[in-house]
Length: 321
Image 1 (cartoon, rainbow, N blue to C red):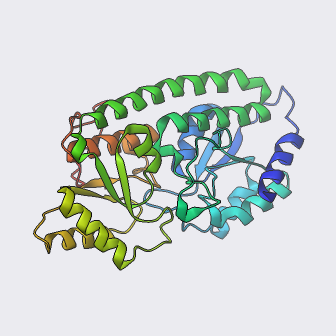
Image 2 (image 1 turned 90 degrees about the vertical axis):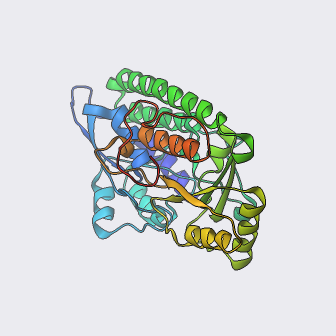
């Protein structure tokens, strides 16, 4: 609450530069998903530096001295919010106190949409980027913040945001149609941790995470045994690992099912809390979700193009294609 108040005060008090000033903004983005929005909306009006790269788990990430320096010397900081970057809260508060604009991109998502899992009472599930329609509101949030800071170029920011949201609408439609081709009895997504609840709700697939919402939580023996029984009883043929989470629990699940005479394979490696390698299609938000949807659909018996929605997915063998 204190952080939100500080941020609100910062946004209100920030004085916009003179209209003749062609200043380019130095922007820090925490996760790659947030950075991708900022790059698409800001383009040549600023430089966007991301803090967390490929395979980095934001639940566990603590800012280094270099990160703190970059945040405090930047013009604008965009972060996901909803406690995803909980270990960075002190740094955000410090930046807000010295007059920096620190903005959570999930700010415009209505609370009635957010999920509050029983094990995290009082805290929202932060993985909203897994529902493309919800993440579109984050695009609006970035455009709004940039208009606050650079009113002269507001029309440009809004136009870019609108164009990007059209691409996201097409992505949402692709995922919806792809998942719908999976046979109903096979429409179960089992992953390393609970990052896909919004995905499940948006696209009609049951989601089970071995660990809880945060990768700091551990799966108990009873939980693992229940999941093994579930796999065997429902003849689930594939489970999924994640790029930013240890494979240990998933492999234990496969071994447990095998000990009961049921073969389960790894259906692919999904991007959950981090995108793919920078410079690749999977290193964009659209590529990340295209990869996930295509991988899940094909592994669970549905129909999707081998190279994804735009034919751009990597041909590398990473357990998915």
